[in-house]
Image (cartoon, rainbow, N blue to C red; front, side, top):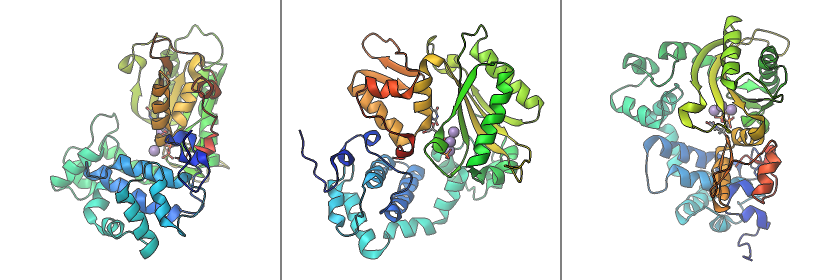
Length: 361
Ligand code: TTP
Ligand code: MN
Ligand code: MN
Ligand code: MN
Protein backbone atom coordinates (compact mmCIF):
# COMPACT_ATOMS: atom_id res chain seq x y z
CA UNK A 1 0.00 0.00 0.00
CA UNK A 2 1.11 3.56 -0.62
CA UNK A 3 2.47 5.43 2.34
CA UNK A 4 0.66 8.73 2.74
CA UNK A 5 2.91 11.56 1.70
CA UNK A 6 1.33 14.19 3.93
CA UNK A 7 1.94 14.69 7.58
CA UNK A 8 -1.79 14.22 8.08
CA UNK A 9 -3.84 11.04 8.61
CA UNK A 10 -3.99 8.75 5.59
CA UNK A 11 -7.68 9.33 4.80
CA UNK A 12 -7.09 12.99 4.07
CA UNK A 13 -4.73 11.89 1.33
CA UNK A 14 -7.31 9.95 -0.69
CA UNK A 15 -7.42 10.98 -4.33
CA UNK A 16 -11.22 10.99 -4.05
CA UNK A 17 -12.70 13.98 -2.24
CA UNK A 18 -15.78 11.93 -1.29
CA UNK A 19 -13.58 9.73 0.93
CA UNK A 20 -12.08 12.65 2.84
CA UNK A 21 -14.13 14.03 5.72
CA UNK A 22 -14.73 17.65 4.72
CA UNK A 23 -16.42 20.00 7.18
CA UNK A 24 -18.41 23.07 6.18
CA UNK A 25 -15.55 25.38 7.04
CA UNK A 26 -11.88 24.55 7.38
CA UNK A 27 -11.04 24.87 11.05
CA UNK A 28 -7.52 26.12 10.37
CA UNK A 29 -7.20 27.20 6.73
CA UNK A 30 -10.48 28.91 5.84
CA UNK A 31 -8.75 32.21 4.97
CA UNK A 32 -6.79 30.43 2.27
CA UNK A 33 -9.92 28.61 1.07
CA UNK A 34 -11.72 31.96 0.63
CA UNK A 35 -8.85 33.28 -1.50
CA UNK A 36 -8.77 30.17 -3.70
CA UNK A 37 -12.58 30.41 -4.10
CA UNK A 38 -12.14 33.83 -5.71
CA UNK A 39 -9.64 32.38 -8.18
CA UNK A 40 -11.99 29.51 -8.98
CA UNK A 41 -14.90 31.89 -9.62
CA UNK A 42 -12.74 34.12 -11.79
CA UNK A 43 -11.61 31.13 -13.88
CA UNK A 44 -15.21 29.99 -14.21
CA UNK A 45 -16.25 33.40 -15.48
CA UNK A 46 -13.39 33.93 -17.87
CA UNK A 47 -13.16 30.40 -19.25
CA UNK A 48 -10.15 28.16 -19.87
CA UNK A 49 -6.80 29.05 -18.37
CA UNK A 50 -3.69 27.12 -17.50
CA UNK A 51 -4.91 26.46 -13.97
CA UNK A 52 -8.64 26.21 -14.55
CA UNK A 53 -11.68 26.27 -12.28
CA UNK A 54 -11.70 22.49 -11.87
CA UNK A 55 -8.07 22.53 -10.71
CA UNK A 56 -8.89 25.18 -8.11
CA UNK A 57 -11.90 23.12 -7.06
CA UNK A 58 -9.67 20.13 -6.38
CA UNK A 59 -7.14 22.23 -4.49
CA UNK A 60 -9.84 23.88 -2.38
CA UNK A 61 -11.25 20.49 -1.52
CA UNK A 62 -7.83 19.16 -0.50
CA UNK A 63 -7.13 22.18 1.70
CA UNK A 64 -10.60 21.94 3.31
CA UNK A 65 -10.10 18.34 4.33
CA UNK A 66 -6.67 19.02 5.80
CA UNK A 67 -7.21 18.86 9.56
CA UNK A 68 -4.38 21.15 10.69
CA UNK A 69 -3.04 24.58 9.95
CA UNK A 70 -0.88 24.84 6.85
CA UNK A 71 0.61 28.13 8.10
CA UNK A 72 3.60 26.68 10.01
CA UNK A 73 4.79 24.80 6.92
CA UNK A 74 3.20 25.96 3.63
CA UNK A 75 5.53 23.67 1.65
CA UNK A 76 3.52 20.65 2.77
CA UNK A 77 0.67 21.90 0.54
CA UNK A 78 2.64 20.26 -2.28
CA UNK A 79 1.86 16.85 -0.84
CA UNK A 80 -1.92 17.43 -0.89
CA UNK A 81 -3.79 15.58 -3.63
CA UNK A 82 -4.81 17.88 -6.46
CA UNK A 83 -2.50 20.71 -5.46
CA UNK A 84 0.00 21.34 -8.23
CA UNK A 85 3.16 23.50 -8.18
CA UNK A 86 1.36 26.65 -9.45
CA UNK A 87 -1.14 26.54 -6.61
CA UNK A 88 1.59 25.71 -4.07
CA UNK A 89 3.27 28.97 -5.07
CA UNK A 90 0.03 30.85 -4.43
CA UNK A 91 -0.40 29.16 -1.07
CA UNK A 92 3.12 30.16 -0.04
CA UNK A 93 2.38 33.69 -1.17
CA UNK A 94 -0.77 33.71 0.95
CA UNK A 95 1.06 32.65 4.10
CA UNK A 96 3.94 35.04 3.44
CA UNK A 97 1.96 38.17 2.56
CA UNK A 98 -1.45 37.51 4.14
CA UNK A 99 -3.13 37.48 0.74
CA UNK A 100 -2.63 36.45 -2.87
CA UNK A 101 -1.87 39.46 -5.09
CA UNK A 102 -3.99 38.19 -7.99
CA UNK A 103 -6.96 37.68 -5.67
CA UNK A 104 -6.80 41.28 -4.47
CA UNK A 105 -6.62 42.37 -8.10
CA UNK A 106 -9.60 40.20 -9.15
CA UNK A 107 -11.75 41.45 -6.28
CA UNK A 108 -11.09 45.06 -7.31
CA UNK A 109 -11.86 44.33 -10.97
CA UNK A 110 -15.22 45.75 -12.02
CA UNK A 111 -15.68 43.36 -14.96
CA UNK A 112 -15.37 40.47 -12.50
CA UNK A 113 -17.92 42.03 -10.16
CA UNK A 114 -20.35 42.74 -13.00
CA UNK A 115 -20.07 39.30 -14.61
CA UNK A 116 -20.54 37.52 -11.28
CA UNK A 117 -23.68 39.58 -10.80
CA UNK A 118 -25.06 38.57 -14.23
CA UNK A 119 -24.80 34.88 -13.37
CA UNK A 120 -27.32 35.44 -10.59
CA UNK A 121 -30.00 35.67 -13.29
CA UNK A 122 -31.59 32.34 -14.10
CA UNK A 123 -30.45 30.97 -17.43
CA UNK A 124 -27.28 33.06 -17.50
CA UNK A 125 -24.13 30.99 -17.11
CA UNK A 126 -20.50 32.12 -17.36
CA UNK A 127 -20.54 32.08 -21.17
CA UNK A 128 -23.62 34.28 -21.48
CA UNK A 129 -22.36 36.60 -18.75
CA UNK A 130 -19.18 37.08 -20.78
CA UNK A 131 -21.20 37.72 -23.95
CA UNK A 132 -23.42 40.32 -22.32
CA UNK A 133 -20.39 42.03 -20.83
CA UNK A 134 -18.52 42.14 -24.13
CA UNK A 135 -21.65 43.49 -25.81
CA UNK A 136 -21.47 46.42 -23.40
CA UNK A 137 -23.87 45.41 -20.63
CA UNK A 138 -22.86 46.79 -17.25
CA UNK A 139 -26.05 46.56 -15.21
CA UNK A 140 -28.88 44.09 -14.85
CA UNK A 141 -31.10 46.58 -16.69
CA UNK A 142 -28.70 46.50 -19.65
CA UNK A 143 -29.09 42.72 -19.75
CA UNK A 144 -32.84 43.16 -19.60
CA UNK A 145 -32.76 45.50 -22.61
CA UNK A 146 -30.62 43.00 -24.53
CA UNK A 147 -33.41 40.47 -24.29
CA UNK A 148 -32.44 38.81 -21.06
CA UNK A 149 -32.15 35.21 -20.06
CA UNK A 150 -33.58 32.35 -22.02
CA UNK A 151 -34.10 28.65 -21.51
CA UNK A 152 -36.33 29.11 -18.47
CA UNK A 153 -39.93 30.13 -17.95
CA UNK A 154 -38.94 32.93 -15.61
CA UNK A 155 -38.87 36.27 -17.40
CA UNK A 156 -36.00 38.60 -16.70
CA UNK A 157 -38.33 41.35 -15.50
CA UNK A 158 -39.77 39.00 -12.92
CA UNK A 159 -36.36 37.69 -12.04
CA UNK A 160 -35.08 41.22 -11.40
CA UNK A 161 -38.13 42.02 -9.28
CA UNK A 162 -37.68 39.05 -6.96
CA UNK A 163 -33.87 38.90 -7.07
CA UNK A 164 -33.31 40.94 -3.88
CA UNK A 165 -35.38 38.31 -2.05
CA UNK A 166 -33.66 35.37 -3.75
CA UNK A 167 -30.28 36.80 -2.76
CA UNK A 168 -31.32 36.69 0.90
CA UNK A 169 -30.22 33.41 2.47
CA UNK A 170 -32.79 31.08 3.98
CA UNK A 171 -32.40 30.23 7.68
CA UNK A 172 -32.78 26.58 8.67
CA UNK A 173 -36.16 26.89 10.43
CA UNK A 174 -37.69 28.42 7.29
CA UNK A 175 -36.17 25.69 5.11
CA UNK A 176 -37.88 23.14 7.34
CA UNK A 177 -41.17 25.00 7.28
CA UNK A 178 -41.19 25.18 3.48
CA UNK A 179 -40.56 21.43 3.20
CA UNK A 180 -43.26 20.71 5.78
CA UNK A 181 -45.77 22.85 3.91
CA UNK A 182 -45.14 21.23 0.54
CA UNK A 183 -45.22 17.75 2.09
CA UNK A 184 -48.55 18.58 3.70
CA UNK A 185 -49.99 19.56 0.31
CA UNK A 186 -48.56 16.45 -1.32
CA UNK A 187 -50.21 14.19 1.25
CA UNK A 188 -53.59 15.02 -0.29
CA UNK A 189 -52.27 13.49 -3.53
CA UNK A 190 -49.85 10.82 -2.20
CA UNK A 191 -50.78 10.07 1.42
CA UNK A 192 -47.67 7.91 1.94
CA UNK A 193 -45.09 10.28 0.55
CA UNK A 194 -41.85 10.74 2.52
CA UNK A 195 -39.20 13.39 2.04
CA UNK A 196 -35.63 14.38 2.80
CA UNK A 197 -34.37 17.95 2.68
CA UNK A 198 -31.09 17.65 0.79
CA UNK A 199 -28.60 20.19 -0.59
CA UNK A 200 -26.55 22.46 1.63
CA UNK A 201 -29.15 22.23 4.41
CA UNK A 202 -28.40 18.55 4.88
CA UNK A 203 -24.68 19.26 4.85
CA UNK A 204 -25.25 21.55 7.82
CA UNK A 205 -25.21 25.00 6.22
CA UNK A 206 -26.77 27.48 8.66
CA UNK A 207 -28.31 29.35 5.71
CA UNK A 208 -29.21 28.14 2.22
CA UNK A 209 -29.66 29.73 -1.19
CA UNK A 210 -32.55 27.41 -2.00
CA UNK A 211 -34.48 24.40 -0.67
CA UNK A 212 -33.87 20.99 -2.25
CA UNK A 213 -36.56 18.45 -1.33
CA UNK A 214 -36.54 14.83 -2.49
CA UNK A 215 -39.89 13.03 -2.25
CA UNK A 216 -40.76 9.35 -2.64
CA UNK A 217 -44.04 7.50 -2.46
CA UNK A 218 -43.77 4.59 -0.03
CA UNK A 219 -46.95 2.86 -1.14
CA UNK A 220 -47.37 1.04 -4.44
CA UNK A 221 -49.33 3.69 -6.25
CA UNK A 222 -51.51 3.55 -9.31
CA UNK A 223 -50.92 7.21 -9.87
CA UNK A 224 -47.94 8.05 -12.03
CA UNK A 225 -45.26 10.23 -10.56
CA UNK A 226 -45.59 12.83 -13.24
CA UNK A 227 -49.31 13.21 -12.55
CA UNK A 228 -48.46 13.67 -8.87
CA UNK A 229 -45.97 16.42 -9.70
CA UNK A 230 -48.48 18.17 -11.95
CA UNK A 231 -51.19 17.95 -9.34
CA UNK A 232 -48.87 19.17 -6.61
CA UNK A 233 -47.78 22.20 -8.61
CA UNK A 234 -51.38 22.99 -9.52
CA UNK A 235 -52.43 22.84 -5.86
CA UNK A 236 -49.51 24.99 -4.73
CA UNK A 237 -50.15 27.58 -7.47
CA UNK A 238 -53.82 27.72 -6.61
CA UNK A 239 -52.90 28.63 -3.03
CA UNK A 240 -50.43 31.21 -4.41
CA UNK A 241 -47.70 29.41 -2.44
CA UNK A 242 -45.81 28.66 -5.64
CA UNK A 243 -45.54 31.97 -7.50
CA UNK A 244 -43.27 31.04 -10.42
CA UNK A 245 -42.42 27.80 -12.17
CA UNK A 246 -38.95 28.22 -13.63
CA UNK A 247 -38.58 24.81 -15.17
CA UNK A 248 -40.04 21.32 -15.03
CA UNK A 249 -38.00 18.32 -16.15
CA UNK A 250 -39.78 15.12 -16.98
CA UNK A 251 -37.92 11.82 -17.13
CA UNK A 252 -38.48 11.53 -20.88
CA UNK A 253 -36.64 14.81 -21.39
CA UNK A 254 -33.40 13.27 -20.26
CA UNK A 255 -33.67 9.53 -19.80
CA UNK A 256 -35.79 6.86 -21.36
CA UNK A 257 -35.51 4.56 -18.38
CA UNK A 258 -38.63 3.21 -16.80
CA UNK A 259 -37.11 1.95 -13.57
CA UNK A 260 -35.27 5.15 -12.78
CA UNK A 261 -37.64 8.01 -12.93
CA UNK A 262 -36.95 11.37 -11.44
CA UNK A 263 -39.04 14.46 -11.89
CA UNK A 264 -37.69 17.86 -11.07
CA UNK A 265 -39.53 21.13 -10.66
CA UNK A 266 -37.60 24.35 -10.13
CA UNK A 267 -40.00 26.81 -8.57
CA UNK A 268 -40.25 30.02 -6.59
CA UNK A 269 -42.46 30.09 -3.50
CA UNK A 270 -43.67 32.89 -1.23
CA UNK A 271 -44.20 31.43 2.23
CA UNK A 272 -46.68 33.47 4.28
CA UNK A 273 -45.55 35.16 7.48
CA UNK A 274 -45.54 32.99 10.58
CA UNK A 275 -43.65 32.55 13.83
CA UNK A 276 -40.77 30.99 11.91
CA UNK A 277 -41.09 33.42 8.99
CA UNK A 278 -41.11 36.96 10.43
CA UNK A 279 -41.04 38.50 6.96
CA UNK A 280 -42.05 36.90 3.65
CA UNK A 281 -39.37 36.41 1.01
CA UNK A 282 -39.57 34.78 -2.37
CA UNK A 283 -37.60 31.54 -2.08
CA UNK A 284 -36.17 29.13 -4.66
CA UNK A 285 -37.23 25.52 -4.20
CA UNK A 286 -36.19 22.39 -6.12
CA UNK A 287 -38.84 19.67 -5.84
CA UNK A 288 -37.62 16.21 -6.81
CA UNK A 289 -39.71 13.04 -7.08
CA UNK A 290 -37.84 9.75 -6.88
CA UNK A 291 -39.03 6.15 -7.08
CA UNK A 292 -38.68 4.48 -3.67
CA UNK A 293 -36.34 1.86 -5.20
CA UNK A 294 -33.70 4.51 -5.93
CA UNK A 295 -34.55 6.97 -3.15
CA UNK A 296 -31.07 6.54 -1.61
CA UNK A 297 -29.44 7.53 -4.90
CA UNK A 298 -31.69 10.57 -5.25
CA UNK A 299 -30.93 11.72 -1.71
CA UNK A 300 -27.20 11.06 -2.15
CA UNK A 301 -27.14 12.80 -5.55
CA UNK A 302 -29.02 15.85 -4.31
CA UNK A 303 -27.07 16.33 -1.07
CA UNK A 304 -23.82 17.34 -2.77
CA UNK A 305 -21.42 18.98 -2.52
CA UNK A 306 -20.71 19.21 -6.23
CA UNK A 307 -17.11 18.11 -5.70
CA UNK A 308 -18.37 15.20 -3.57
CA UNK A 309 -20.71 14.14 -6.40
CA UNK A 310 -17.98 14.48 -9.03
CA UNK A 311 -15.62 12.16 -7.18
CA UNK A 312 -18.37 9.75 -6.18
CA UNK A 313 -19.12 9.29 -9.89
CA UNK A 314 -15.40 8.71 -10.53
CA UNK A 315 -15.27 6.02 -7.83
CA UNK A 316 -18.42 4.40 -9.23
CA UNK A 317 -16.83 4.25 -12.70
CA UNK A 318 -13.67 2.71 -11.29
CA UNK A 319 -15.85 -0.04 -9.77
CA UNK A 320 -17.80 -0.65 -12.99
CA UNK A 321 -20.89 1.38 -12.15
CA UNK A 322 -22.46 4.62 -13.24
CA UNK A 323 -23.83 6.75 -10.43
CA UNK A 324 -26.56 9.28 -10.98
CA UNK A 325 -29.33 10.61 -8.77
CA UNK A 326 -31.63 8.29 -10.78
CA UNK A 327 -29.72 5.25 -9.54
CA UNK A 328 -26.57 3.13 -9.47
CA UNK A 329 -26.30 1.20 -12.74
CA UNK A 330 -23.95 -1.65 -13.59
CA UNK A 331 -21.88 -0.91 -16.69
CA UNK A 332 -21.91 -4.60 -17.62
CA UNK A 333 -25.55 -5.53 -17.74
CA UNK A 334 -27.06 -2.03 -17.43
CA UNK A 335 -29.18 -3.10 -14.48
CA UNK A 336 -30.02 -0.48 -11.91
CA UNK A 337 -29.57 -1.68 -8.34
CA UNK A 338 -32.14 -1.26 -5.64
CA UNK A 339 -30.80 1.54 -3.44
CA UNK A 340 -33.57 2.65 -1.12
CA UNK A 341 -31.05 3.98 1.38
CA UNK A 342 -27.88 6.02 0.81
CA UNK A 343 -25.92 3.35 2.69
CA UNK A 344 -26.73 0.85 -0.08
CA UNK A 345 -24.62 2.84 -2.54
CA UNK A 346 -21.65 3.24 -0.20
CA UNK A 347 -21.68 -0.48 0.51
CA UNK A 348 -21.88 -1.56 -3.15
CA UNK A 349 -18.95 0.75 -3.94
CA UNK A 350 -17.11 -0.52 -0.84
CA UNK A 351 -16.34 2.90 0.55
CA UNK A 352 -16.97 4.14 4.09
CA UNK A 353 -20.25 5.94 4.71
CA UNK A 354 -19.67 9.67 4.87
CA UNK A 355 -22.12 11.63 7.04
CA UNK A 356 -23.71 14.57 5.14
CA UNK A 357 -22.03 17.20 7.39
CA UNK A 358 -18.64 15.89 6.20
CA UNK A 359 -19.47 16.05 2.48
CA UNK A 360 -18.52 19.72 2.11
CA UNK A 361 -15.60 19.08 -0.20
P1 TTP B 1 -27.65 23.44 -5.04
O1 TTP B 1 -28.99 23.61 -4.48
O2 TTP B 1 -27.33 24.21 -6.27
O3 TTP B 1 -26.50 23.79 -4.00
P2 TTP B 1 -26.41 23.56 -2.43
O4 TTP B 1 -27.70 23.03 -1.89
O5 TTP B 1 -25.22 22.73 -2.19
O6 TTP B 1 -26.13 24.99 -1.81
P3 TTP B 1 -27.12 26.27 -1.82
O7 TTP B 1 -28.41 25.85 -2.41
O8 TTP B 1 -27.25 26.75 -0.42
O9 TTP B 1 -26.41 27.28 -2.68
O10 TTP B 1 -27.43 21.90 -5.38
C1 TTP B 1 -27.72 20.88 -4.46
C2 TTP B 1 -27.12 19.59 -4.90
O11 TTP B 1 -27.92 18.98 -5.87
C3 TTP B 1 -25.74 19.78 -5.52
O12 TTP B 1 -24.80 19.10 -4.75
C4 TTP B 1 -25.80 19.16 -6.84
C5 TTP B 1 -27.09 18.43 -6.85
N1 TTP B 1 -27.80 18.41 -8.14
C6 TTP B 1 -28.16 19.53 -8.85
O13 TTP B 1 -27.95 20.66 -8.41
N2 TTP B 1 -28.79 19.40 -10.06
C7 TTP B 1 -29.08 18.19 -10.55
O14 TTP B 1 -29.67 18.10 -11.64
C8 TTP B 1 -28.72 17.04 -9.76
C9 TTP B 1 -29.01 15.67 -10.25
C10 TTP B 1 -28.10 17.20 -8.60
MN1 MN C 1 -29.50 23.97 -2.43
MN1 MN D 1 -27.40 27.14 -5.33
MN1 MN E 1 -30.96 23.47 -5.66
